[in-house]
Amino acid sequence: MKMSGEREIAADRQTVWTALMRPEVLKECVPGAQEVTGSPEEGYEATVTQKVGPVKATFKGHVTFSEMAEPDSLTLTGEGKGGAAGFAKGGADVRLEEIEDGTRLVYDVEAKVGGKLAQLGSRVVDGFAKKMADQFFERLEGVIEGPKEEDEPEKAEKKGWLKRLIS
Image 1: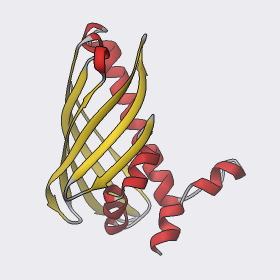
Image 2: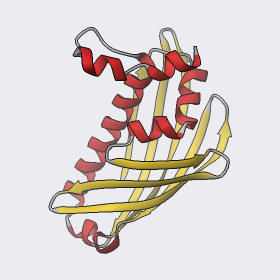
Image 3: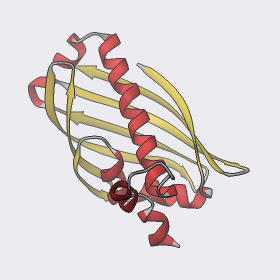
Image 4: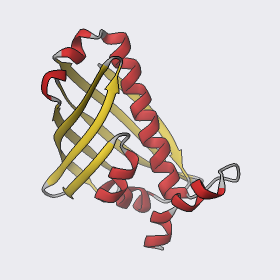
């Protein structure tokens, strides 16, 4: 499965880069993440619980960063095992481009799944992967930019903490 997309974030490239390097940001942004530990140099260990169609599993995996050209681009490579549910592995090339109102984050993802997940069919798996990517980048945008005017007050409190932290 291959997928590409982009998202515009109202922050400078260095702020977006910093966010992508922090395990606490990744934990908040990855849907279903229970734990994310590590560093960009050594890689990250993650535990993520997800339901794809009728298959629910807890995946334990490892993600490494390579080809890092701060603050322009990086490559992520990862693999997760979910026991009887199967496995997922793949990589993503991420580029950060300076734009007038902030940063354009462009990504190209290639992933493979096996086991019960692969039996669900590409339509279900591809739809799930697109939804996960959309949720990740929407959450990343919220962590960096802070609350939007239409956000509920209790949700607004959680958003934008990274910008307050590094400002």
